[in-house]
Image 1 (cartoon, rainbow, N blue to C red):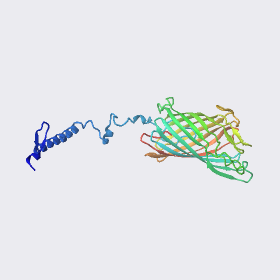
Image 2 (image 1 turned 90 degrees about the vertical axis):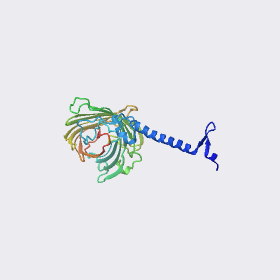
Image 3 (image 1 turned 135 degrees about the vertical axis):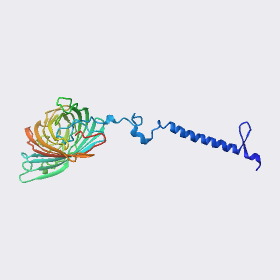
Image 4 (image 1 turned 30 degrees about the horizontal axis):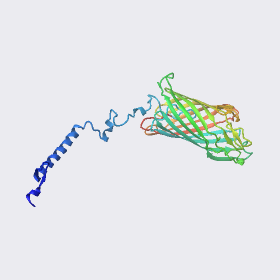
Amino acid sequence: MDKASTNFSLPGGKKCPWKSLFLLVFCTLFLFIGGREAFAEDSSQDLTPPSAFEKDENHDLVPDLLPLEPAYLPWGPNTSGPFFTGTAEVEPVGSFFLEPYWFDYLQPGIGFSSLSMPERLSVGLIQNWEFDISVPFVVNQGTYPTTPVGQTTNTFGMGDTLIWIKNQLTSDGDVYHFWARPALTVEYQFTLPTGHFLNLNPQLYGVDQTGDGTFDEGVYLILRKHFKPFMFYLQVGDIIENPTQVGSGFTFNNGLTVTQAPQSVVNGNLLYYAGAFEHVVNDTWGAGYLLEFFGESQSGQSLLFGAANAPAWSYFWLAPEVEVTWPYEGTVTVTWGAGVALPVYQSNYPQTYTPMGTVTIYYNGPFGYRGE
């Protein structure tokens, strides 16, 4: 190889030896690497690695999550709460609870009892909004006079499913004074006729009926007011019951009247009202007692479907209750409640005595304590 082969041509026809080329490449790499390190040092204040998210005080990299946090109350212990009256505060985002209930509706005057076991799930999905679903399982028992003398009939089945959405409008303004602003919520409720109501077995005398077969829509206004060491609850709403086709042997909502032939049933509007007074004796344990009232009244008219062909009825109950929370701290807490609903007034409705209990298993998410 001759000497000329160790050179290459530059623009203009000039020759460059290999030593010059090596020096040029070395200088270029040196300047590139050094400049890069210098740039990184000068820009260290501007670049934010993933590990620095916790120091993102200006919320430039992640959204401001503070608006998702509920209005924390200086006094608001986690209690079981009332059985029939809802709670105005909704679940915080990321929190949820599972709440099995037991309601044993005893109607000795007609020889009938119904043990209802709703399984409720409540989830905080969006700020100020809560999603709830309640799926009940029902054990019915009939004795005389529902059944012939000396005969007892038992059935088990699924009841009608409730789905509702709660939107909290206001939070408690002052938890120490009764006349301060209360927490208010609007609830939208839907009933799905998942219970058994068609093709009833005549040999079971209606005991196998576990639902009323109607799609219902309800709107409620719910209020809760803290005034340490007490709480006051109130709920009132209207339920529109859609027409449904039933067969013979179907029992109307009053539990007394039975169809003799297949027909279309139009129930009247159902007025729902409930309230409770709660005294929290021990804040830490969420221990206390409640006195609750509850009533329903079905009219002879439907808001959307005209005159009802179902019988009108109404009743009013009072329920003393007790409650306690254990365990009461940590990510998971559990509240326990028990009581009995006693009949005070009924019209075209059987006297009903209702022992009841509940256990609430609550998961405390990143934004705080439960609303109910």
